[in-house]
Image (cartoon, rainbow, N blue to C red; front, top):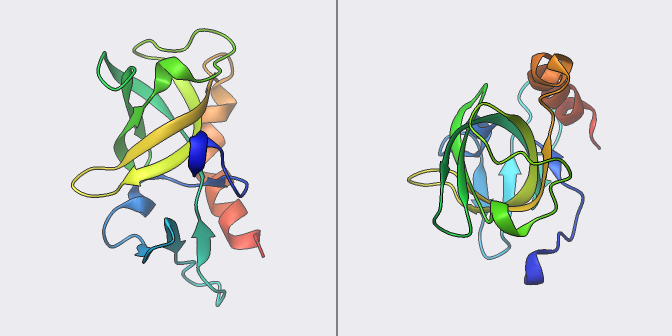
Length: 141
C-alpha cells in the first residue's frame, strides 16, 4: 500500500482472525485470506482492515503506538499520531475504530493506521461489533 493509501475498501475483522490459524497470508500480495467457515464461500481477500477496540496502552514509539483490545484479543496500532482522528482519541480507555493495513501477524498483530476515530460516545458500537463483523463477512460476495 504505497503512501499509506488503501487499494480496496477495508474489511471488518476481529484481531483473532488475523493470527496464525485464523487465516493465511497470500504470498507476495500483502493480502490476507480469511476463511468463512460454514458458508461454503471462498475466503475473503483482505488487504485493508477496519477494526475496533479499547485503548489499553499508549506508547511514544513508531509515531505513537496504541495497544487495543477487541473480542478476539489484543493488537498494536502504529502511526496513530500521523492520521486523521476527528475528536482526540489517543487515550487509555477510549473505544476507537482504526482503518489500516496489516504490517505483521506474528509474533503479534500489528496494524499501521490510516484513520482513527473515537467511538466512545455510543456503547452500541462496542456491544454490536462482533455481530457486525460476523454478518459482514458472511454476506460479502
